[in-house]
Every structure is written in structure tokens, then in C-alpha cells.
Length: 76
Image 1 (tube, rainbow, N blue to C red):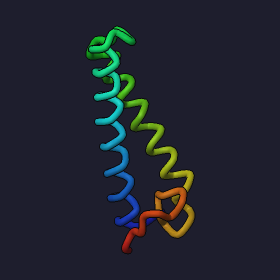
Image 2 (tube, rainbow, N blue to C red):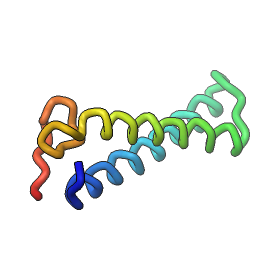
Image 3 (cartoon, rainbow, N blue to C red):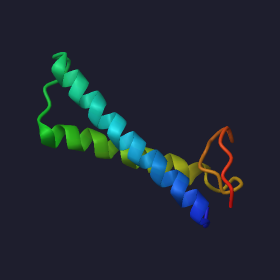
Image 4 (cartoon, helix red, strand yellow):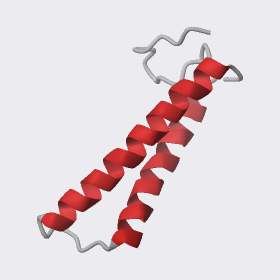
């Protein structure tokens, strides 16, 4: 968990989760499922990023890999 490779992989996951959360909220807003302004979209996106970071930290103790199933191998 204290390697640069771990933090690079974690940062990639967090950014992807933030983007996915924003796109999901924008998509839900455009279909009328929810009504979200930019503050609401940012809130959902950042919440997804926090969850992603916490998941990586929870699983990061195992081989320095942020993956829960070790499907991804991180080179040190």
C-alpha cells in the first residue's frame, strides 16, 4: 500500500469512478429519473470517488494491490 504503483492504480480508479458517477448522474437527469443541478452531479461524482478510494485502501494491504480479487497485477 505504500508503493507508487499502488497509488497510481488507486488514482486511476478514483478518477474513473468520479467520471462514471458524473456521467451516471447526468444520464439519470436527462432521462428524468432524478433532477440534478451541477452541485448535485458533483456531489454524486465525488461520493463515487470517495467510495472507490476507501475500497482501494481496504483491499490495499494485500500484496499492495488495490484490487479486491487480484484480477489486476500492479508492478512495483
